[in-house]
Length: 315
Image (cartoon, rainbow, N blue to C red; front, side, top):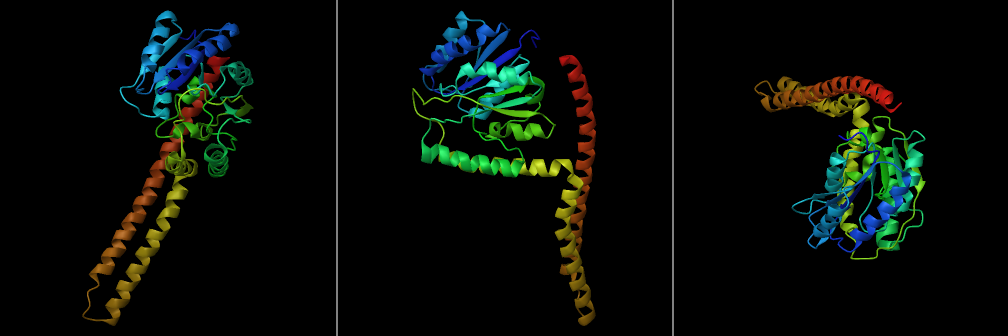
């Protein structure tokens, strides 16, 4: 890793051959005056047009631009994850490649990061999108995400965000998880801030987003809720899940005993078998909680040590 690079700007691209050159110029114009070492990473997410050839030609002229190419289209989150993995900067800024995010906002993100925040999220307060298909579903989704995760972000869908590299590189990303990064990072005690950013109407092509993504977001939200709820006290949560199993085991045992006394010739093997099965399931759930508690406590100690070392390096 090149420790001299302070900033990495990561941009997933999919069929953005017209937008890419203008975006490159805008990013360069925004970060060059900062007088810091920077790099730009364009991740071609299996584009079917000339996006890759376009950015490859630009990269041949500017060593600050690096290009990553996917063989096929995997989606925005995997493309973003690839850029994060290959980034060398201490601060990572992610944004969309359709010119709707404004690179001129990047200096404000860096200023906010210098106040001690680990993640800074953009808020498109004057969003230039369709009301019914984009704005209203987004407001509802952001409200639900805030209630479920406990991290009240006004605009989780805004890709323009800034992260400390040591924080974001430890957050697992898949499916549509990029919108839940603040919630995931909050598990490690990261400080999150939100700033207003500019938002422009799309100039070229068509939007890759639509209502079809809602079910993916809902499934990912369920995953996040499970992680957030179970991580802190896994033994308690698994014990609560085990209670219905143990109750069913007790009921099946009682039914078997009653049947045995009422009908002398009866052999309630089924009820005793069900009782043993439910008891085993309950025991398994409690054991899983105990293992999870052990893993969490061990990981918590390691994280405290890592945070302490990281703080020393930053200072």
